[in-house]
Image (cartoon, rainbow, N blue to C red; front, side, top):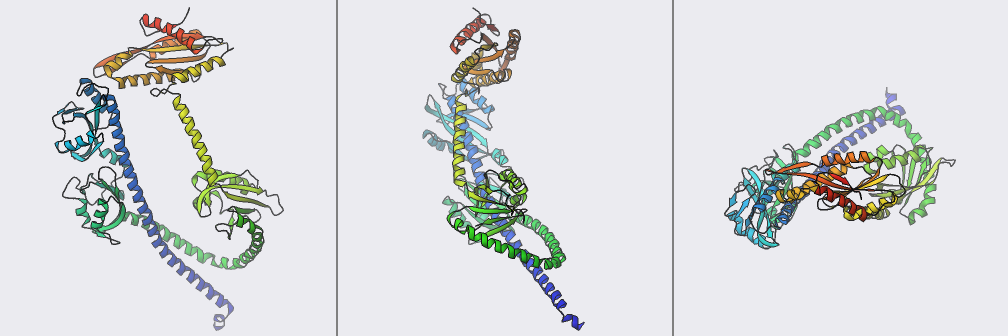
Length: 640
């Protein structure tokens, strides 16, 4: 026994035990450090998320209020056509606009506060406590947005703009908008660990918070301001309620942490840029603990499995050390020779040359991540799944990289230069992968280079965006703004082109003019907004009724035109026109009024040696006139 303890074998076993103990101790220390780092990283990420939440809520409120101001401006443009305040037509239009909006109430008032709302109720004075302030804003041609108005336990905001008649400010156009709609769109659940609250310049809570973690739920109570609340909390980093108050008075943004009854909150505050409102976005600290504890449990399991695995394979690793040493020595010799060969090139360029060694199943990068480094990667290390997992490669470049990997790694074939977005040095950017030689060498190696392609890619994208913008502008300029059909100029151009192309064609074409019967009654009885709806419905019916090769347009008012090409059977075509007459017949109802719309259609058949647009139009118009004279709601084909 004594001989064994002094033998070489016992010393080897003792060395292995010591190494294992040191390894396990190092893992425990690393694990504890990892847990602290995990919490810190979660905190940094959460702080960033709270700031992003603030910006998102801020942008949502601004866009929603801007949208409703724009809606009022659209209504104002329609009412501007009226001659006098409180006319029956103006009140009817106001009711129509209200029905198609999500305002709680719409109304108009003169500059003295007398007015009427969309329910028909009349007002002698509009909100005495804000009347003078509204009048000052309106007379300066500005938009007025009130503080929160609490009605039936619902937070509303009062928006007002100048009401102009014949381009002169004659009164006020106003609306009440429920801010609950914005809160619901932001869509935080009651159990979410993030929530937000909004205050006015006096510190009053303007909106209720749905979160169960919100400390103050008495919104609308002027005695329960946020400054009263903040005075109860404990802060870190020398922060205090007074300092936060001063920052808010100066219109500043910032972050702070506080505790109350053992509960922690991370807060970001910033001006909402609406009146003097301020936005406070909150991350509940318990949310961080939930995430960290879940990760902690997973890591413990991993640590136990890893430790058992280390103990099981340690003996095998010991026997492999010598083999690994020989391989490393061999690779070192190769790298020394190659490093000398490429050193001059690396000094003169930012490109990264690489070698694909198919015998060793590895990729060797020269000058990565720094200019003096040589990096060895196995084929598994650079496979698409690993590159995505290590965040070297984003999902947007995955398919491109898969094709590149299959071509040069799996098949050993040379390919054309490939452009993709990936890690390049210390940051992600566009790179170009070029293969200089294929794998036909005796060593079975391929050489290539990674080149920074960011500047060129940016130029390419600018050109593509410019071309796309030009295409969109060209398309919009060809269409009628209301119906989306071709406008007059585009329709004429396309018909003349079709006439030239159809010369020599044995089939005839048909030129149709459709004029809506009694359309003027819709505008007169139901308003121009209803007239626009009728025109849009007619346009959709025509678009769906005719074929893709037919040309459909609106050349003004209630007049539509169609150029139907390659008509093989005139009788079948006439049956289709009868069906179209039936399709376009429809009665429209509004406010107890009824107008029946139909269509009169004039048609000119065009042969292959035909005419130009003007001649077709004149003859089809004569046929249309005959239909109108004979009772409307029908069609006629022009004949001499």
